Image (cartoon, rainbow, N blue to C red; front, top):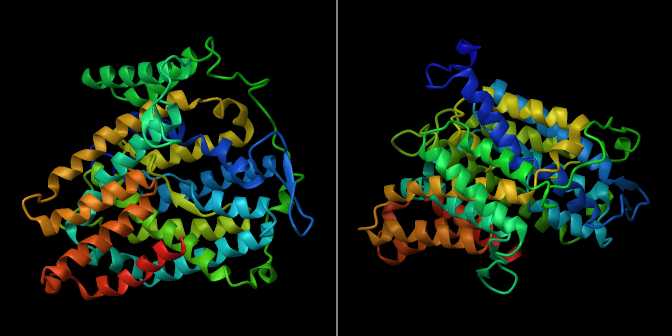
Length: 440
């Protein structure tokens, strides 16, 4: 195990990797509760009948989400040997789910869109085009990605816990609510344990708040811990493709949004998390980045065949990295948790936002340190990272932030007469970036 995962070379141990894997899973377990509702609809209804008369159940979506998340994350650990976990990304699922619920798309058409974007991912990864795009992006943008993600996931923590409210602008949440109080307690627990250099502080904080939330009604105990999944309805979501349903003018736009959003979300997550783990070289590149890119691409194709929206590398992987995760063993542990979740889903979905939110806030604090590597004495170098952080945070999207940051960097260089400092490929990249903002 030590030789295969290179534990000693990366300065980690089996115990640390196990804690890191558990931490990553605990911070992203919410996907098992969110994904079924994002596709079928929030509310008590356990299923939806699409425009083609096919019944899509929440249970089927949950089972396949847990199963494929586990298998693709396993692939990441064994093939790429990186501490990255993957599951259905938040964004495309809500967009396509809303169109399914409104009758604009059939479930098969949804999966066809995801499949096509996934095939494009695979081709770009196999031919090394994704790696080329990473290398032509300027270093100041790449090193600032980690900080941008830090602000973004801290925002998610504030939003999910209710510490902050964003319904009508930015405001303070209701501090009389038990969930908000527990979230603050959780943040303090993690901070104090970290100050005392306790490994696994984030995991302990999540567990503590989950337990403390029981008497306050914040943590809802399930009727049973173990539940044998029913695969009876899974056949409706597997290999369900409706290419005829794509014969509309909006199809290309939807494919573009699904592809482009995940492309830069994955790019940002991989570079940001790797940067926190100090895996980047002196140019801000990640050696061997083609492997996690290929895993991500293959995951989306496999996901489309099994009823999952776009599979992407999760930014919550940073929580595991902060807990000490440095190898694919972390991903293996997270994978095992997802596979167990197909049988223990009632136990895993009880983890409240009050428990995972503080973890996101704290990891956000730890990740913003990357901003110190940006040369703020040079305005033309600093403007792009600033725009990226602001757009990523206040527009609530990593992909939007990175796209805006790249455009701002190119425009400021061109308009100040420094266009020769820009890689020619960046001008080509600006075309789909602009289209992303127009059509998204």
